[in-house]
Length: 219
Image (cartoon, rainbow, N blue to C red; front, top):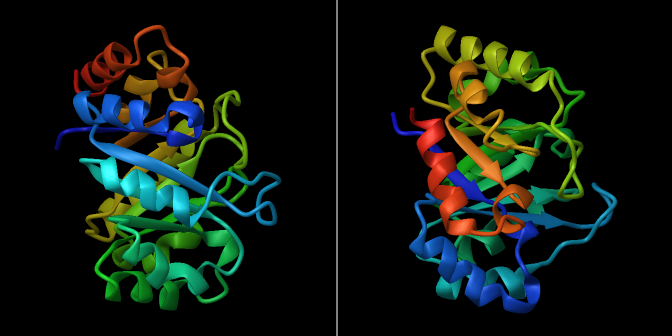
């Protein structure tokens, strides 16, 4: 299967957001990765519903929404109405994860689960067949531009083994510190979707950077 690139809008220029969205539309990127932060679950506040609504008006590709918020169940229907195609909640924020996954799917979205660097992938085994996407955080959630955590390769391999053992169709997404140096190694470990923020948007030619990352991931 083709490996996907999902530029993280958190690293875009918010003063020129439409320009950056159109750049992603024209690039080889596959998804828009949208981080919603509440300042409670993570020590940062990104943007909320009005901004996502504005992004959706211009985005021509899959909208992958990553909720870094407490009690995400309150907003499942809201994010479905705002155009999310994939809705990812944090394992650490869900008291009844299976119920949350079912609620996401009931709204017509693909259901994702994100796990923090300290969370063991084995905790997802009992619900792996209910999860469409697992987002492995390769940095601590909350801020862009952090250094990649090397243990991510091991976690990715372990998760891939769980997926295969359970004959699941779950995709593996890596979020944080992804660049041209580690992309191939992550794919070899089992990753399907690579989220890249600062590496794309802070480069001199973001569109070319996306193209090169896509080529590396699929080489």
